Length: 624
Image 1 (cartoon, rainbow, N blue to C red):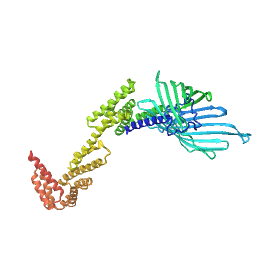
Image 2 (cartoon, rainbow, N blue to C red):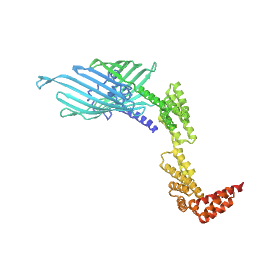
Image 3 (cartoon, rainbow, N blue to C red):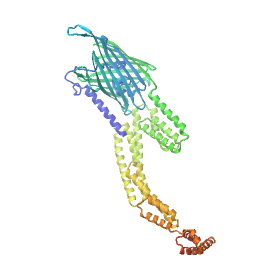
Image 4 (cartoon, rainbow, N blue to C red):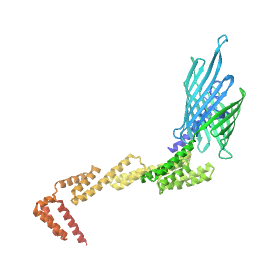
């Protein structure tokens, strides 16, 4: 399962790059036509001054509320609740407005709402003689409902459902359409991001009178690249987008943003022939973005966006949740039973393993330490800590990620080789899977995994043959041990589980039969009946247990009690004389007297037991 994530990531990388190539191609078959003019969405002007100041190159960045429009997958990057608004007064009284709201959550993904509106009023209404008869209005709105979620640590997917409404004079119509967005961070190069937004993937169409007009299909693809400089919080973001609307040629967008500690921003870009500049200022929860566009068509224009961010960041909420869980754990620590402590230790051990598999070694270290807090002598956690210590040291002292990953891969391979040399092929395979999750193209790891899988399968097969051979030879204790080993290696095998239950029953039956036979020979038929009954319950196919069970019951039904002997005064005197002789150490005389009792009452259990006890003491004296 872990190895499949690498394949999915690389496959998406290829798909997104292919989409870029298709869009750039001048004669692609998806959206091209024989002419370069055509229609485009009335809202293609954009949704934020920040993106406009970067030339509209924002699909691969999309890390603020305007991602509702530019790339639905981007809202998964937001840490806080965010609200942003844009108002533009265009020509001839036309107003263009945009309002976006994003609400991120820890457990359920991120949710977004958006409203875009274009409108103008007081449009003259004229008859066929060009005589004015009043006026009318035009306006069109588009409402967004967006959701995004992290599929893996590298991949986010988002989608928007859109409802459009258009009014011209007395005519009005509505339309439903949808967008699909993808945001992908390159494994090993998380500063490089690929974005894809397919707008109007579906459109039901607007029908004002007799004709239906659908929202045009548009595909936007972009790359984003982030560079740190002059300190941890200073960054340069570079972006390039290409977008293609059906029946129009592709447009290229280039942009750059310099971020000074998240407080001040300088931007520039190129937007399909126009040179643009921008700036931004952020203070506490308020951010103001500005864009200057120099266009041959409309001249120099200025655009502003005002944004607000609320609440605690998701990262802080996560830390607080972990802190609360740790406080609760400490408060309950003193009253938990030993089994609960082991369960909690295993929980943190598994949590640490998951974090270590994602190369989050410092967080894994904390998880392992939590496991040791529950169970200080927990050897697996101690071993894991020893295993990840080199990675933690490397994270602290090495800045180059390539070197860190190389050393980490070598250590995983060494651990896997050591486990394989000990015959623990399953754990060796798990280690290789961790490596393939980090680097799915590691040929050495793939070759080792193939070898270990083959050895693991052979190990399982040999153990099955040996266990079955012992089972057929009725060497049940040895067979039980082999099947237990098989169960540890392959716990989901129903045949192995069934055989373990069967052998366990046979061993229990043999144990109870042995006890019953000893009691039967001692003349204790009541207890022997109980043991033979338990033996028969464990193994109903054992006819021997059933036979001795019936014998015990027959003995019980025909036994002569001491009360019966007391009714026969002569026999009772013989029985008591035997007791006196036994107490005086004259075992031979006691045995003769009790046998006379058995001549008349052969089923008297007391006489039988006494004789066996006396014979046992005589044998002991003879050995001395």
